[in-house]
Length: 101
Image: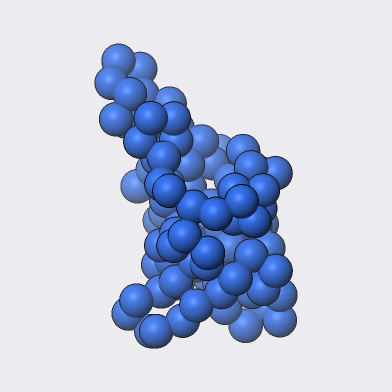
């Protein structure tokens, strides 16, 4: 797994590895609005995580996830704030993402 200095560098590096879809975290699933794709926690795996902590500003804290559908046909990234800026999600999604932080 590569180490990246910034969120942008991580996203670019993962895109070069084929993680081309831009997923967002919903309450119960991740979704790619551009392609109308939805995956529940049991339908994808987290392949890599990259955590970035802001040196002086908590709003700079972020995690980049590289995700892949279980069938291997869909690959993309998720960016998510953590701490006080974390997204509101259900227990199953919390468990899935927490395993990889």
